[in-house]
Length: 404
Image (cartoon, rainbow, N blue to C red; front, side):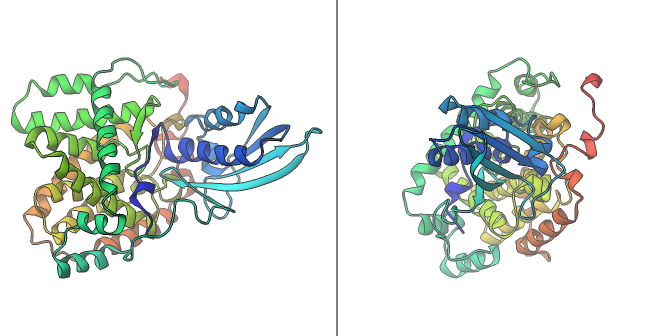
């Protein structure tokens, strides 16, 4: 597995696969074709189907137009390239307007891109163990925690990076709580985080706790939908889950920043295992690979904070993902708003429940996290494409702006 720096990416929303990945690809293509007379970009499959709602074209044009040359976007939502549903072809044009070079690349989720010439993109494989079972067995034998395995593989400098991740997550929560108004896009949704926070403060104990978790998840997700700065955990569309859980526990239980850092490392290890062995792309496996994986990460992080054993942490993560199996990716109008924002809030609450459930157990259970990852991958590939970020099925089907 590669570094967790490839999982936690600090950037702007609303979509890691549809905005961050294409922007990165455009930057690479521009750096290699600065002497072109113009550019043409073909977007395929899911990338084209919901690209306008995710501002894919805006991200690409923003980069390529820096050269003051014309940029043409071609949309082909019905054409799916074999490697991944989020394919795109960049073309440089000569003075006659004809292609002089082209490059096909894929946005595979979480802001990562893959394509020709990118074999070493993202750095080397630094983890010697690639499954949760291998890692758990190592931790049991060595007496180490998951976060210690991360530090062992990444080096102590990873702690500085995790501090930056945590600072960004906290800032996203707090900015989201302090902001009112309308989210961008034709749905005209109003922000809810501040209202939920204020109402939650009026309740006691359990209801107050749950309401605050909702408000924190809404805050980060609304920041993402507004193009604010967030951390992919593991994606933009699921970026509210891990921060909500950790922020809530940090505020309510007075965990130290060091303890939060350890929880972030544990969460990243869980997400990395899924990314390496399956997918975190909604266009590839549906929302189970985004919100489902985020729930697993948050559940494992919470269990780490409360002193869970490696087996209990693995069990919490397994439950977090298992109960999102089959979840479709069907964004209304191609926006990361409905149902994405509410799903983040519910998944944060589910993560806390998974932690509590696993803490009552000894960590032993029948279905391993590794087995579940394979089931998630198979389930996602069995889903028809209209349920995987194309905006053609599920909640998004036949939805008209006039319905607002």
